Amino acid sequence: MSRSLLPLLADGKFHSGQGLAGALGVSRTAVWKQVNRLVTDSVLEIESVKGKGYRIRGGIDLLDIDQVKAALDARASALMTHLEILDTVDSTNAHAMRLAEQGCLTGLVCTAEQQSAGRGRRGRSWVSPYASNLYVSLLWNFTQGAAALEGLSLAVGVAVARALQACDVPHVGLKWPNDVLYDGAKLGGILLEMKGDAAGNCGVVIGVGLNVAMPAAAAGAIDQAWTDIKTITNNQHPKRSRILAALLNELLPLVADFEQQGFTHWREEWQSLDAFCNAPVVLHAGDVPLGGIARGVDARGALQLETATGLQSIYGGEISLRAAS
Ligand code: BTN
Image (cartoon, rainbow, N blue to C red; front, side, top):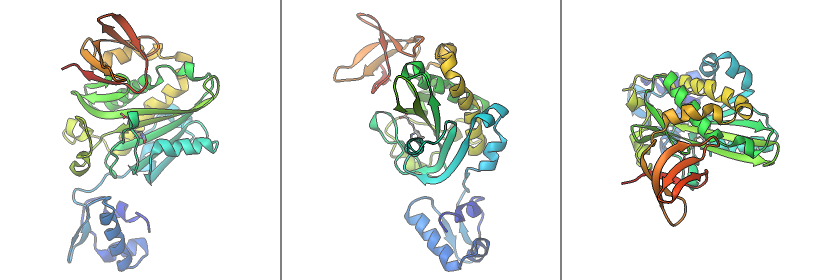
């Protein structure tokens, strides 16, 4: 039966064991076992009240493939070759990369209700509770080698910010190289992974994680200041399927045009969203932190750091940038 029970409970109302069993064509015992499994796996809290049945208090907002497709604009629809909505997966990036290795095509989008091993930058994990946030990976094959992709991850940040603006999430900022911020707190992150020929054809998996409605129980595992769309919009946000479509409406045209346009096309907009523009910062790359004033990015997407010894261009990598205290 897997998790076919969840869509029936998504409305947050009580449903009797008998009604659920009838809808799924299974026994009441099978329903009871399934509820227990979901609770034991800590997927969700399911309330069980004698005489009333089961409910998920407050309901859940499950992704709906038809709603996503209906909200895509014509260009994004044409560019997306496949949309996969998984229930649970280790990491949508890892999954998309596996599909890439099997020869899957450019334009594949993979998303999941939950990640069991969501990956963040710098070897960190990405907290990915069930039916709460967005975990999305887009696979795209580029032909002109890694050099033509300089600044791609920054441009993806611009696409994410645009999508959020389209969903009435205001004042989103970007932190070099890949963080999406709101009022200094992390709202989302971007992780690009690449395979193939650095000088020619390469497959890139573009992973985006967005906090939509982070449950308090899951948030305990986050080791930095964070926020979610629910908090920012005072719970007045579109459903996750609409937010996903808004993201794809920006992301798919971006990847399709990026090799031709390059980061230059996105640079000005990135700078307008730069949350650390002209701010004192400290870079942590190796053992020795490097302090300076952040002066935006150059045409290749390299951070321009004004240090005591002059302006330095900092390229991506395992670097973290923090406000200087
Ligand atoms: C960061 O550390 O800021 C990057 C986080 C990227 C998370 C997303 S969620 C979808 C995709 N799958 C993953 O395992 N990671 C990325």
